[in-house]
Each structure stands twice: as C-alpha cells, then as structure tokens.
Length: 295
Image 1 (cartoon, rainbow, N blue to C red):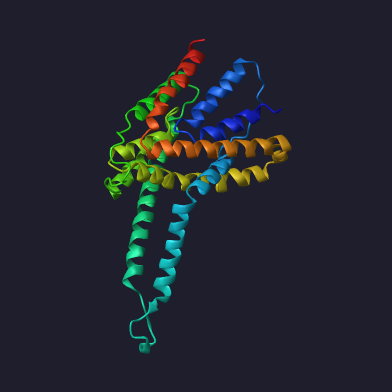
Image 2: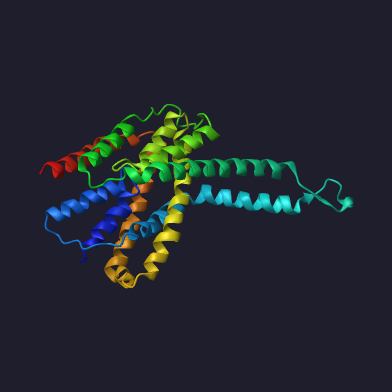
C-alpha cells in the first residue's frame, strides 16, 4: 500500500476534530520518517484538494440550516421581484410585502456578518499569516498544541445551553471572529475549530450559534481552496491518475465515513458545552512534538 494514503486518511479525519489537522499531519510525517518509511511526496496543492471530503462532511451535516438559507434567499428574491397580490386584487398589481422585506433584512444581516468575518480573516492572513507558519519548528508546534489545549480547557460552562437563549451575534463579534480565524491560520498547532467556537462562547454566543457560525465563516475558505486550487490542479497534473486508483478511492471513502461519524460526535459535545474534553488529549501531540525535537 502507498504510505502516502496514511497522510490522506490523517488529514481528512483530523479535520473533523477540534485539534490542528496540519500540525498532526506534520507529526505523522516525522514519525513515519523516524520509522524508516519512505513517504515520497504529495503535490503542494493536494492539501487543498483534500478540502473536498471536508466539504462533503459539512454539507451533509449542515444541510438543513444552510438549505434553509438558500430557500430563504430564493423566496426573498422571488417575492421582491414579483411581489404578492395586493389586498384589493381589482387593481391588478403586485406589491412587495412586509414579510419579504423582513426576511430580506434578516438574510442580509446573516450574509453581511459572514462577509465581514471573511474580510477580517483574509486581511489578517494576508498581512500576518504567511510569516507565522513554521511547522518545521517543533517547539513552536508544541506550543501551538499546548495553546489549543488551554483554549479548550477554558470553555465556558454548560449553563443555559438547553434553551439556547444567550446573546446574539453582532457585527463587532463577527469581525473579531474573522480576525481570530485569520490569526489561527498562521500559527502551527493551533486549531481553528477549537479557537473560533470557544472564543464565540466567551463572547456570549450559545453553543449552537457558536458552532454554526464558526463553520459558516470557514466554509467559503475551503470552497475556494478546493475549487480554485485543489480540483483544477489535480485534474491538470499528469500524475493525477495515481490518486484515483482503487486503494486511493477506498481510502477516500473510508476516511470520509469516519470523518462524518466523528464530526457528528464532536458536534454533540460542542452543542452541550463539552469540547473541553479534548483539552486532555492535547497533551499527547505536545509530548510527541517535544520528543521528536529532543531525540
């Protein structure tokens, strides 16, 4: 079996957990190299291509809320364009009803917050993110893992999560979460999933809103990475056929199923305020990174 398949499985599965997938992937590469396993090399764009399985996981899990937004957008556009029959049909005209306007304002608020968060994230990534990534620096990687553990351990209590009645999301909070996601992107070992959800909880959002908005602002990034960099580059690569043999296809399918099952389990923990369980696990990658650095 191609040893690079292990990297594929690790990347796809770890992406569903509130731990650093890139950091863990680096640890797996180093451990396999220490064991004398010749990995070969994966193209640089293959990491973007592996966002495809993550998109499938998110699309299936968030199908109901995200499809509701799509239907809302269609109804708003259709209603504002055509209107509804007026109370006095003899006039033979259509008007834009207040319900369509209210729905349109709600949709604009949601889309606006997502766009504001994305702009904040992209601005931070462009200015600072590129210079911070140093996965070869094992002490820095261990520090990122430790920081992820501390963030998870600081998760607010479970009080009030049953009714989901905590404060709502505002534009300043959306901007802050977007900037945070851009910052996390550049620090090795630091989990975007863990940081955005936990910080959203610190800002007073309910577990459900924190979880859903975290992935709502993450989804456009991986859509762009997969459609603009990953898929076109794989299709244009002369060696692309080697990534679609039977062992690779089985690895895609198996890791996708595992990733979805894990994501559902982690979502239940997030929605009940129990992501801090993963804080104890983070001691493992910290210890492995330090061991590789020392020995």
